[in-house]
Image 1 (cartoon, rainbow, N blue to C red):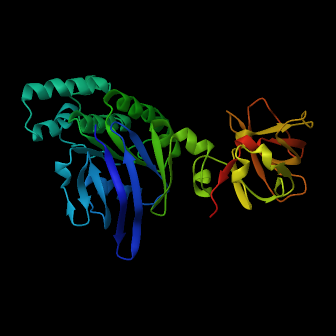
Image 2: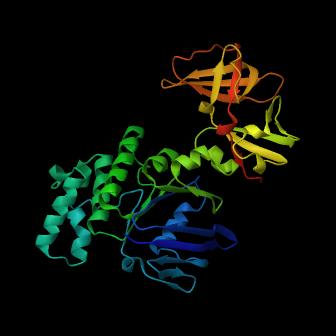
Length: 357
């Protein structure tokens, strides 16, 4: 386990700034995901951590020692890091056991110790019975397991993963998310995981750094990112949400078609002027009749669209007299009809205030 510190790391390619003043501290044994859309700079950041690219500005340090700076960069093979690529990069002419042993043999470890450690790691990843098979005889998730075992067996100080599940189908991806987290809990290796898949990041990570156009928008625990996004980008990228724009007028916050008293919000003093909020679809409650008196805002509306998705209903509701279209998620048994008149219950405590752009 190592402490990894990135300080104002910037990487330029000609006139293009791919990573812009990226700062992050990983505590020993922490699992942090770099999450964002394609082209946001997450893989470039990972390659700088690995030593494949040098930063244009800033520094990267492991346990207090600077390993990357504009003028000096420790070679990748001297960083005690393991990296797993999208393609897995396992040797087709070697068996599973030989692939896993490769890194130990390069490090000239005693043969008896290599056999013992490879056997143990293969049992941990539940692949001991496949030790003598070749990669072409394995399924996609099994090949991924070989790549994970090979990366972990050398006991790296830092584990780097670049979109490791992108080549798997949806069901296998879901299974492997939990497997990666299980292995992290077993070995407690400081881990940086690159993905564009929010579900992968939410399941596996202690914290997530959301990136956009080379910059970090927010770093937080998965639950905090979802419940309290700080920017419009994070609110929209982490799950589905409703973005509401309002303006303070006296003691009220006025939205398009409805008003909520400022005192109803968790931090009323922080709400001033033009304000934006994120409200998750499952935080809105639908009623057929106006609900009893509550701290929440109650807004009449009309249901204009619906979709049944098995685990829930996805509704679109237009509040009366507005151009808004609010998405609402309900449980499967809460069935409403298109064109039905409904009342929306909006709880201010569930509305996350967003930073002004």
